[in-house]
Image (cartoon, rainbow, N blue to C red; front, side, top):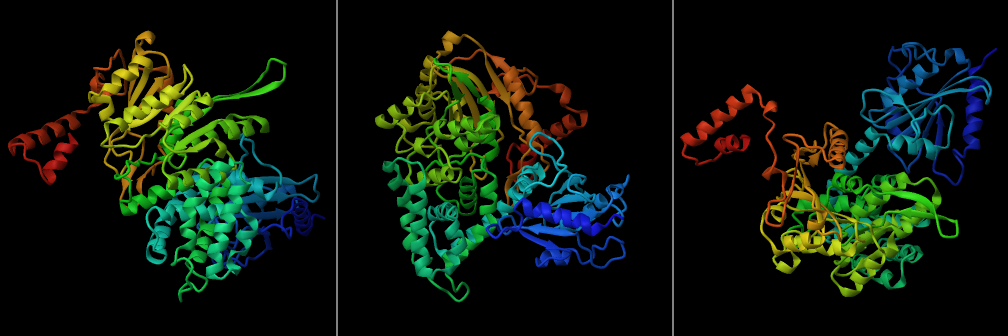
Length: 637
């Protein structure tokens, strides 16, 4: 006779064979109940009978390394009771039951739900679902190829598949950005760090947490000794990284001032183990799990950008305008990066991949995005290793920013040897980056520099000159570069072809008040020689909206479809009224869609036209003096 305890025993044996609960892992397996207070609270009214009271799945699996995830199992002895037609019988059926528990637990966790029925290992029927935290319902869990997961797999595989679900990734990103405010306030109130030291503390700690021994033992040190050990472990991790010795000192130096900061080594009543210990604990709990999974995410740059929002920081004084993550992703898609394997002259396989250059690397956002895009295209480990070792080239002048960029690369185990510290205009660095023979350049140059020699277009020209002939250079620059006269415009077209210009959302870099456009060039081919029209796109709506406390966010998840449409428009050079146009231009012309684009009058309703006329009449009536509501009326036009 079928016995549910037999099914549970089979599942237990499979979990043991797959390494769940091994002494060297932090995976915790609990049965019928949990020591996690939040889980216990959520299951208090989760009885499958629907009459209230406590309920619990057969197995609850968790890990301190991923505290926002749970894996739960519900077992039934017979495969006849695997799933009901309407998923509404949680007492009798495995799938119905596990989805029932997931609804309760998903209020605080992203839940991977595994329904199992059968009596033998070979005869098990397995269904797997994902219920993202805060979501209204579950969905079938699939692998990277879109195939349903119908077997019990290792914990890391479950977690990887669940983590890359768009809803889960967005929720984790939102949680991380919310935590950045909390972290900023903590560092301001308790650590007394300067604005430039705050992101260094974050990046240095994340490097230190790569060291497993330190991650497990940092709580055992006295406050004074912890500072010393923190710096010691950072130096150790930098030494381990494949960075030329000449660059290791440059990278470690900015962290040394934090290692002797007086406030971090103090034990205070609220934090008897010291402020640094509390900071490490917070980052280990809230940030490290994210970093260890999402290798394509510039977490250091995101924190740096968030800190600048709260303080004003140095973004205007230094011309630093950090590139939003969705824009770095857009660049990688516009560049049409490639990865393949070809045969060399001896018939041996040789990896071919696009080499990407950023001469103003900042925290490395463009390089990280390009790396991840190429790794998605890679099919073999040889291709992935080649991308990491050979295909990412960056230059950063400021020592602190260089340390942040290098730490970002170390967190991904790649790309450090090709990161240069110094001015990209330095002759030795220029020679070095040309030696990499990069085919793609990505650039967000310093903005609003008073020195004419450091005009944004000077950086664009320098990037293009460093690329291989026929290479693609992409830059995001202030709109003034596209519409205001400047000698460098003529210089650019003398040697390079202006392929496209896209007008970007007005508040893309909020809270910095700069309106930007993306320019795309073909390097080394004069514009006159190409003798073709330039494509202009009007990309003013990226789906992001400005919020009071979180900056610009994609609340409706509109960006993915907008991004895909933009990419298709650019690649096909589509011409559509109100969205895009093709035009021959010279250095004397304006380089923006607004100057040439036809208005799409079909999109204007009678009501919208009447409203605009009324507002304009009010504007004229008051003599053109705008203020308060009148200003809003003018903006609405």
